Image (cartoon, rainbow, N blue to C red):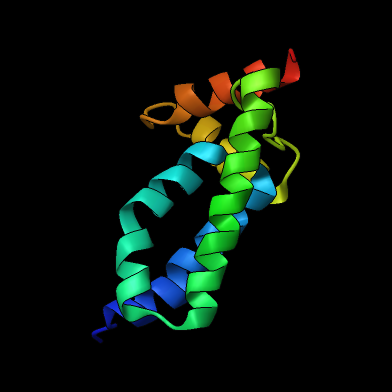
Length: 111
């Protein structure tokens, strides 16, 4: 089944932005905004554009917070999705992201 670009952004990318903001994970938010913002403004509804603008404002504030308090200082390592992903990565020792996520969790706990 083919999903058009606008539907993909609205059904997948917008929820991903929301989830990453809930977790406090700035890097994926920044990546998604950098990658999709121009296209969102070209093809998506005003409501979706507004959600991207809210995410841009959140990112600006989050980056200022991280500038003062350190990278990943907003990261909620107790968020259920973060915990579930981290458990899966730990259970699979060959996964390439395991060390990165573990480092983020350890860095956050020592803050």
